[in-house]
Image (cartoon, helix red, strand yellow):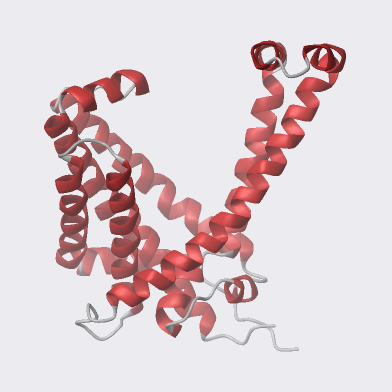
Length: 276
């Protein structure tokens, strides 16, 4: 049985950083186009159409960045729509699995919380107001259950996304929807891939979030209270669109670019090795 070569965290992280540093003009162009495209839709006000547009531009931007990091012959924009659609299909499949896990964890949490109130729940019957009051009391009485379930859920999501981390670059490179091959390629390298993600993307996320906070302060956009922010977005759609466009630009240019580059470099390293 062939054994996979040792994956170097330093080489993977260094390769991702080198791509962003050397191709910074390409990265900024992709981030700018994606942010501006959703900003034009958002200027009309938050809506379902904007949410769809946001998803489309995020997937397209990630596909473009990963394609660049994979070293595909440029220009590759003639294949970008098809690659983006296939990446969207792969991400949908992964999201389906994560959704099942979310439902399972929700069921477990509610079972634990409601078990001491079983008699009251039966007495409430189909009285929705009474049931909601019981659930609220159960949550307030045992908040540690929610904390533990959330921690377990976060760990499971991180673990699964690490095993599926090569799905997007593999889908782009092979020009077909590729999900479970990522599970095979990452076998034996889970800790290294997880370490590379934490080492590179944690500071990138913190840095991008800090810059976004500075933008919100400069533009006086309320972001700490979701209700107030929604009211602000409804009353000042252009102002909110400007803030969100700048924030999304920073998110793509810093975090998304490094994430796409890291997954691409990891894929190149592991796809060249024999898989068990």
